Length: 135
Image (cartoon, rainbow, N blue to C red):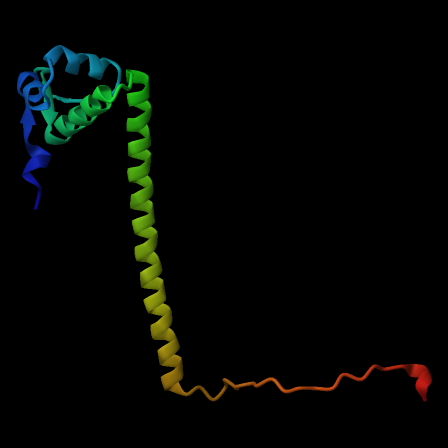
């Protein structure tokens, strides 16, 4: 099932109003590559809910005193962090699966009582130095 926020789009005026900025600012951010609205068949900008959230993030960074170059860098780092978090989650899931498979295989071997497996214990041995001239 798709999330309604994935399909909801807004025209530039509504998106700008929801983000609390002027429509011209949205156009500027698009020219700078900070935002990529989708375009409909008539080439009209359509902003998704995620675009409005991104605009709010840009605005918060701007209000914190960051210039556009700094905002670009922060957004790039945000994207990189999101990618890395997804990779970590994937690796954690893979590790959990492999651990479960390993534990199941070990339990199966124990239940099988494999005759070819020999339990070896360490014993203490005295080491004697071999000296060929001591005969």
